[in-house]
Structure formats: structure tokens, C-alpha cells
Image (cartoon, one colour):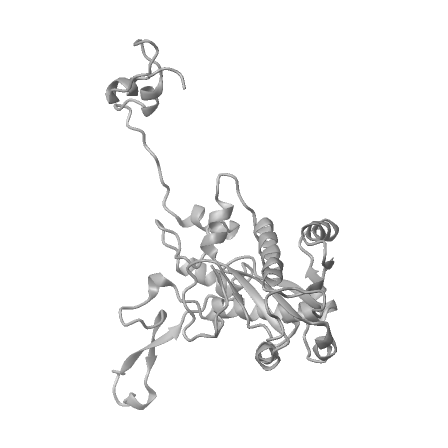
Length: 331
């Protein structure tokens, strides 16, 4: 799903369930009319990612070259090196500066798993490459005159840079590690990717958990009401207080994520849609805690393959006889 919306879905309350992958584009300045002309000012673009699932977010930030001096003074950097408050402030700067635009592609856990569990798998790196190419292509199709593009390295930088150059020969690419620290426009993309992913991780709405009254999924805990405590009685009033589900950061090294995975596994069905089944961490947990599934063949029933094997009737498959099929000659 791709589209330009008045509001980024992660700015909505509550955030809609991420049922499928999608790409969001912020509004372009009025000077961009959808057609690239020789007289159009050149733009710079930066691309970075956040996460490797649940979800994986790729983001592109782009602005006219004349905005570059202002961009250098705004404080963009590797989002992981900045506090949450600073990231939020920088996120809001996109609304305050119409020249600074962004696009984000959020890959849902289900879509990532579907790609990786295909007969011929599409691994994470390939899905990330496709997302990167898609972001650049979308900007070009919208009439943005991209002249320079800086990309945080994905695998071997020279090979990836060469491939991007072959796809977009009119754009000068720079692909290198730590690009979010070296180039402010990549730091801006890093903020978009990080904030988008964090909001999905911490405010995720699982369709399986939405209550009949459409309230958000929460975990129940008992909390004692201090004002109701009778110091002379052994009976204390308790109320049920709904606490947000703490899933942690989504990385396997996070103790909160580990606790969430251990506490929420279903021995038969595994996990809800938020969890990527192609994740090696999940495979280990399912092998250890899941119920074994055994497929038992009914030996009393003939194999379906026998219907397609030639029998003694002029070497025609048995299914031909059962369905009344006959040959009509050669075509």
C-alpha cells in the first residue's frame, strides 16, 4: 500500500493496526509540480533504516540543496545517539519546515515472514534493498529532482552503490557505514525511521487483542487503592488497573522483549501478528515450548499420485477414465 495522507499513521491516536506493509509520503512544497525540468533546483536525499522486523522501517529524508545550510544547524544525527525528547523535537521539525520532506516504508512482520518463508526465500537484505529502491523511485515519480543521495551501508557498500547507480544513473550516490552520523540528511532519515518504528513497537495495536468496546489491548494487574485500606482489617479493596503491554524494544537482547516472548507464547499457534515467525529467536522458542505436530499418512488410502500414473488402459492416467476424458488429437 502506498499513499500520501494528511497525517502520518503513526501520528494518529490510537495508531492503526499494521495489517500490511505501506509507504507514507509527506507533502511536497508547492514548487514541486510533479514534473522534473532542467530548471528545477536539485535536491539531496538520505536513507536509513530502523529495526530488522516488528516492523522494519526504511525512511528517506530529502530537501532542496538551498536548504542544506539550515539542515546542518538543526541537530540531526544518528537517532540512537539522541534522547527520546530530542528525537521527538526533530520529528516535529518536519512539520515546521516545508522544504524538509520525508517518506517512510513500514514492512509489517507478516510481510517480512511471508517473504522469508517462501519456497524461494526473499531474505531481509533483499527486502531492504527493494524498500530503498522504492523510496527513491517514488520521489522521482513525484517530480523531486534528486541529484545526490546518501545511504547508510547495506552489506558491502561498493556493490550496493554500484547497483543503485545502475538503476538511477542521473543521481550521484554515496553509500557508506555510519552515514547517519556523517551526513545530516541521513540523520534526518534516521529520526523518521526510529520514531516510526518506536511508536509501532511501544503502541502496537494487535487486531487479535482489540476488545469489544474497541479499547486498546492491555495487561491486567491488581493495584491496591491506598485510600480504601482499613488498617484495622485484614481485607483490602483492590481494583483492576489496565497497564500497557510492555514488549520492550523488539531486539532479542532486551530482557523486556525476552519476557514478553516467554509469557505470550501459545504452544499450538505460537504468537500473534506482531511477532515475525521467520525470526531465528522465535524458531528456537517454538521448538522448545511448542507442541510437536505430526503428520500421519493413512496407509489404507491410495496415494493421489496413482491417479496421474499410466495404467494398463492404453497408458492413460486413471483420472482420465474417472472423469471421462479422452484425447482429441494433436494441437
